[in-house]
Each structure stands twice: as structure tokens, then as C-alpha cells.
Length: 167
Length: 167
Image (cartoon, rainbow over all chains, first blue to last red):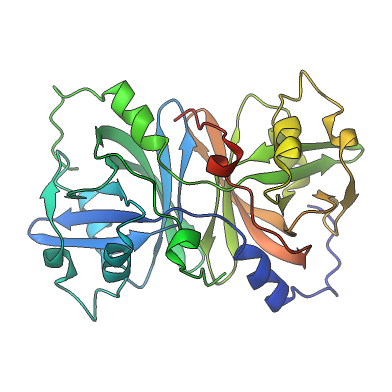
């Protein structure tokens, strides 16, 4: 283990300021277990391997979607376009406050049974191959099993949407 | 496990096209074990937990830096500005082809001993708390132990740099 000067505490303002400089896209993530379906807006998403193609996605432990992912072991990621800020806002609302939010958007079910947003720039469906506790969240590793190209467009980003990352 | 129609193979062109729509920032990651130091350009980086503040970073298994991270159990992430595309290009060269590339940039050592890029927009230093095999790469989870705000500026992104993600 490296030597850490225990006397230097983490500056919370600096931490927040720097973490807010990280760049993120915005994605509509679809999850389903049987008839129980949900979509939420995610930004803690990144590819993590080329071969096989793997994606990591961090999901808050206290939400509804994590249960659905644990049951179905699958999820779909739809890439939002820069003209879909309203959808990002809607699907970003907490499920508890808007349990039927998925019914306010147009979606279809993919081959894994996960909801895919209609009119997205593209989508991938993933099967969960691994997961890991990560503080207040859980990191899921998903193997890309299907991919579909949507319409032309520029991807929506956190910065472009004017969304501020909590940091 | 969800039902998968085995007959539908993943379309490699669609997979690449959609994965290239994912949005990434560009970061200069500094790693060191003793006198052996390196910096490389990373984009597979995301925060994964607020409390404690955790970052996930995927590192290719066949590179030099992964050994340094395994030895030191720490790394530093410096956020590149949109005027530092040349540094992203330099540090993105393979270590084997440019083993002294870190000496071509200005850096200092942080409290974990990890190299931090001078003139970055900001930096965080992380202690590795966990790791996970992820295909051709390894996913490291780092707890943010220190953060430093740098100069004003706009973060460099893959899209802004004109770098094409392999997908």
C-alpha cells in the first residue's frame, strides 16, 4: 500500500469541483422483470472492454431499477440525442415519484426483454456478466449481446443538457 | 437468466456504430511504482459512487501501466482542457513505442506518489479499493483521497479532440 499522509483530509469543495469536470453522456437505460418495467437516465456508463464488448454501469442501491436488473440480469442502453433533453429529465425523475414514467415515452422490448427507447440514436442490450459493490451504488458489467443503430444525430451530454453532476 | 435467442448474432458494425456514440472525456492518468512512472490517456473513466467518492477506470491488460497500478495500488486522474489535445495524443501513444513520454510533459507527484499533470483543469488521486477482470481489460475502483482544482477551462472530450473510439 502506498504511504498516505492521514493528516490531509479530502477537501470536499475541491473534490466536487474536479469531479464535475468529468465528461458524461446521457443514456436511457431500460430494465424489466416480467411486467415490471422501468427506464431511467444514466450517466455513469462506460465501455470497459473491446473483446468481448463489455459495458460498466453504476446503479444506485436505493432505487427501484437495481432490483429489476438483479432479477433479469439484463439491461438496455439507448443513446439519447441532443434534442431529447426532455426525455433525459423525465426519466431522471425518481421512480418513487413517477412510477409510470416509462409509459410516458415510446419504447419497445428488445431480445433480452429490456425496454429500448424508440427514436434513440442507437441502443445496445447487455447481459450482466458480473457486478461489484461500489459505495452507495453497484457496478454492473454487461456484455453487449445486441446493437441497433437508430437515427442520425448528436449524442446528448451532461454538459450539453446543462445537467450538473453532483460530484 | 433471461431468454436469449442464440440465433441472433451480434452485428459487429452496429455494435461499433452505437458504441462510438458513447460520450467520453479525456484524462491524463498518472501511475508510478518507485522510480518507474508513466502517464497515459484514458477515456474509460467514470465516477461510480458519491459516498464514498469512487471512480472506475478500465485499463488494458497488455499495457505497462497496469503493472504499476497493481504495485502501487494508486493512480491520479488529471482532467485535460480542450487546449491540450496534443498532450492527449502524446500520452495516448503506447508506452512500448514511447517509454519516456511522461518526461515530455510537466508533472508533479501527488501525495500517493502518482504523477499529476501540471496545467490540468483539476486532478484527483485515488487509492485502489477493488478491481475486476473485464475482458481484455481490468476495471479498477479507486477511492478519491485528494483533489486539486487547476486552471479555468473546458474539459477535453473524445468528440472535441476528434478522437474516434474503437467501439
